[in-house]
Image (cartoon, rainbow, N blue to C red; front, top):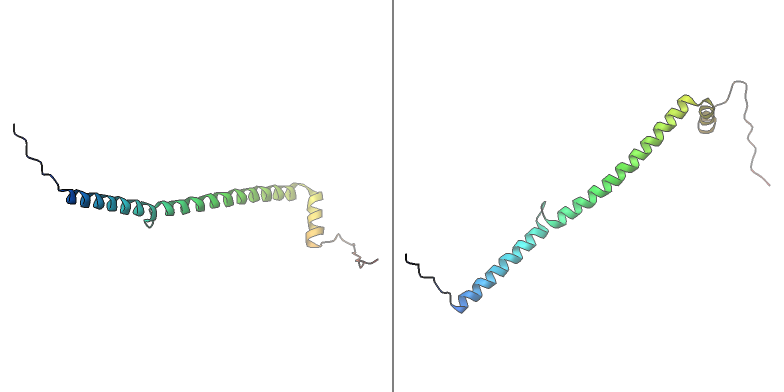
Length: 105
């Protein structure tokens, strides 16, 4: 079996080939970093948005739980219901009057 003769590149061609390969590799790396919608920077930004949204979700879930507990307390605790009605809504019992005194020395 005969081997095909391999073509030898001149030193100038080898240098040009190396430069072209380095340029291609550099362009590939730049594309991986900055590609719109797919690059590393885009993915980092998306990850930080996900982290922020997860934190907001945890806060909202905690608020929901607190509100569920308050709803349950208003529905089951008559004393607390009266406190809320008087304090937050200014409601009075029948035949009850409120006297407001000015803050003074």
